[in-house]
Length: 332
Image (cartoon, rainbow, N blue to C red; front, side, top):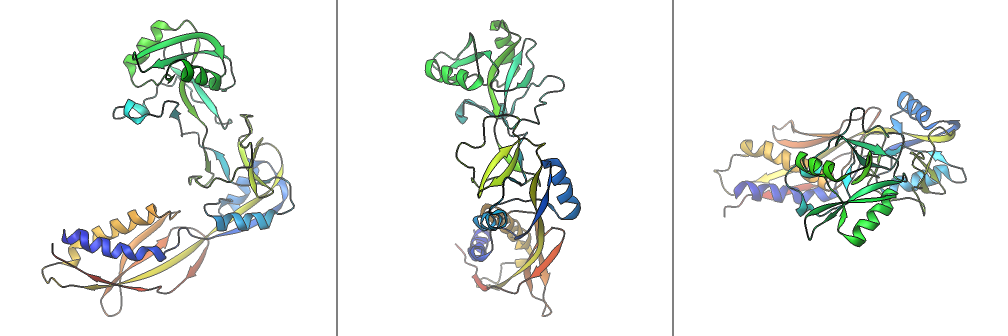
């Protein structure tokens, strides 16, 4: 209990820290395809523009005001596969992540939304979701799989299964594949697996929703993101548009910690690594984006404080101590 008390009191001082590290944006006013724009940005700056906070959006809107589509760093997250049946109690450990892709699959990286179908051999392939295929439903009341020999687009098949049974089938293991193989009479049959998520080209998650109405469009090959009239839109990646790059700023923030011990038996040296671990965890929980490091540094008088440092490339901005945090250690 002593260690927990120390950490929680230290973490109460985190709320002044910023939720992200700032970006410097650069509008490039000549047209390139999305891939050409990304290559240019990575060579000249850091990457195509990302936006994690409303402050980022405000800067991008001002920079691109009055322009047609301007490329930013939005791309499909090709690893973000999920099941139509979202009830987590249906899946045992590791079952929601079970995959049985055929050789060379999935290969729809140029599509922002794709859906999965099972082949006759039980392996899976990704297919454009508007393709017309028969499908498997799952009935939770009978725990049975149902082969529906009607050709529908994936979303229509999903609606049919949800209306008449429970949902499109989730395939959790090899034995269920064998069961499905026995009831299909089609070379391609929809299952409940699909992806329809986006991320930033620098690998960070896209958590801020700024899509224009009716966007992203249902055209699956419109797989690159742009900003138009302050909102995100998707377009074909080969179109030549202006684009926005960003430079990540290197920023160092120092947080001094004043420790006051009321119990002389507590050894702060033994606690320091656990304190750093909890700091890192809570910084991430509070939305701090980007790579960062935490470490103890020793002051001239021999005392210690924590230094937080983002690992980025270009520029550095330093700021001083924001506040002191007084801590007490209690027995319980």
